[in-house]
Image (cartoon, rainbow, N blue to C red):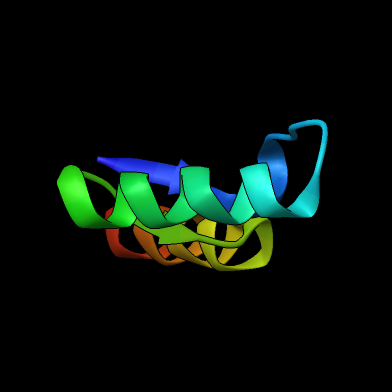
Length: 48
């Protein structure tokens, strides 16, 4: 599963970074939106 790092927000940077750390540590791959878009494009190219 993926968690988009710049696709969520909290009240402070400290809370945001804690959330990202918790997600990465427990059960998610944390990526940026640009990386997710690239994965989608690669998948579309593989199907075509």
